[in-house]
Amino acid sequence: MATAYGIISNAEYHAQLVEVLDSLESAPKALIEQNLYIEELQRRLKRVKDKIDDMKENTREKKDLRTSMVKKMACRVAGKKEELKTRVKKEEREYEKALEDEMQERERQEILKEVIEEATRARDNLEAQVEALLQAQNNVSALYSRVFGRARLKPRGEFPRNDYVEMHLRAAEENLVSVKEQISSNEGILKLLEEADNSIMLSLKYLEECSEQYATWGVPKEGDAGVLAQIGRELKSAAKAALQAELSFDGARRAEPLIQPLQPLVMYQPGTPCDTTTTESSSTSQKISPLAFRKSDAYASKAAIKNNKNDLFMAQKTVGFEIRSMGSRIRLLKVDLSKAENVIRETEIELTRVRREIWDEVVCGRASPVPLNVGNESYSDTSSLETATITSKDNCKTMDGCLDAGTGESSSSLIRPESEFVPPPPYNYNFQAERNPAAT
Image 1 (cartoon, one colour):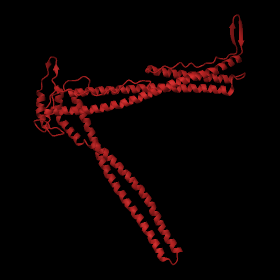
Image 2 (cartoon, helix red, strand yellow):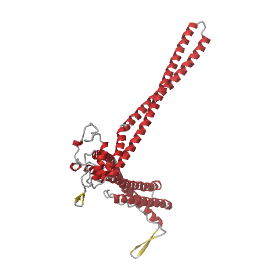
Image 3 (spheres, one colour):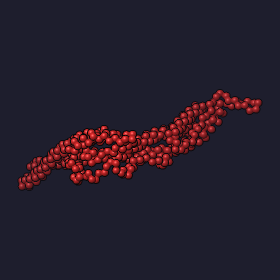
Image 4 (tube, one colour):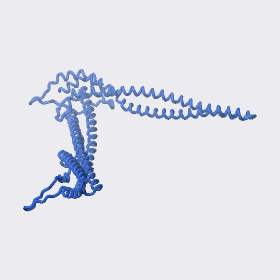
């Protein structure tokens, strides 16, 4: 009953807002058409300006030609006055015609400018109307929110039609939040996958530099300790980058377990050379020279680098596949996001329409709320509501029933009580679907 009382109490204010909405309903469409009209006028004005520039140049040429012909004929032609006069008249006519055409285009340009100014003023007026319409819409929405309350999943039961659309609006809003959260999560996963891919490329770069060392110097020989040291540094950097790739990829897998696993990236690490290396065999000990250790290490490094590069190439394919898959998933989710936003907009429009219908029916006395049960007793204290209803009937066009907005006929017989309302089929608001992470 509180909702119905709120409707009656705010009937006059609501009627004022509705009057503004109805009077400005066509403003948005008119504004779009006016903008298109102004754009067309501006294109025509540009064409006229370009034409004037061409005609201005033509007029200048005709003027120069006329002047030069007079001088030349006067100086060089003797005894041919008639021919001179004919030639001068021809040049004069051409100049006058070019000047006349230019002036006509200039007049047309000025007319177009005036039309554009007038159209711009009309557009400014339409923009003010659209702004007033938006303000009235916001005021109506705020009024409905105060009277009917915010959309909620649990129905109040007072006006079933309102409750029904409210529930779907709330569900659509929750669906939108869910889609946004999924997009945010997947974008974070995509960032980790891209970091893993960058680390793999960096590791490959270091291994390629090692291969270039071998291609340039061959297997290090005596006195090539500096080359071995450089190769060792490159291998350590490659191993560090590979480890970072694994960490980033593992982070992505923790967030999305459906991502396929990555084979361990074990990079070859050469032994550390020393002055002497001792190996024990039975009861004898053998000393290996530092050079012999380095040479054997170098031979092993060359073969290991090739294997490591192959492992990284395979890992790069796996990571690249997951990056494409995740990018595809994000694009699909953004499509879902757009659909979810459209559903919310459509449901909000539907909720406003239903609330306005309920409002008009209550004000005109054609509908009453469903009684609410408090404990085992029905709340039926409607004396204040009945009093307010009597005073609010001035807002109706007839005492027998409000006139239908579209036909002007009484529609009281077409409106069923709220308790008899049969809800329409549910909205298809949930666009979220399971995505195959292997989709490319």
